[in-house]
Image (cartoon, rainbow, N blue to C red):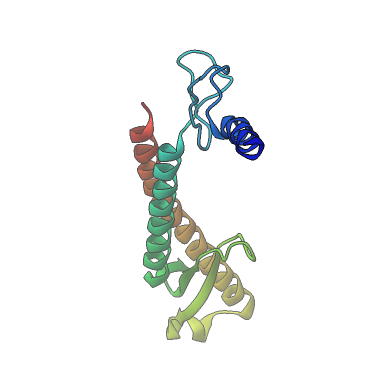
Length: 165
């Protein structure tokens, strides 16, 4: 009899350990993933997880467009001229190799010199004509790249504008 009374007392005491606590107050909590709440005033919220995922997707689109643009520019032949068109230099655009080389480059792939001009020109004038043609080609290439990247910048502005609420 003593054993069953003691067993019952122990079971009753241990059963309350697994019962819910009725003395504490219950409050709801919000889950603020990646910002968007907590500590900010009414109506102010930062980007939530879905907004950041959308921003990440937009960043991937921009990177893809940039890569496509670089490939398009690499295929183009840009010609610089000097000496009234008698010296022509063909330039290729070399996109920046981030992070190793953050600056784009230009490569001279072809030089055309008029034979009549070559026969009667001094070496100093020929040298100056080549330099002038290379610089003209690089300038044209820079202008072309700037125009293309301006289109990319406008696309980015449209994308980011669509994300504003």
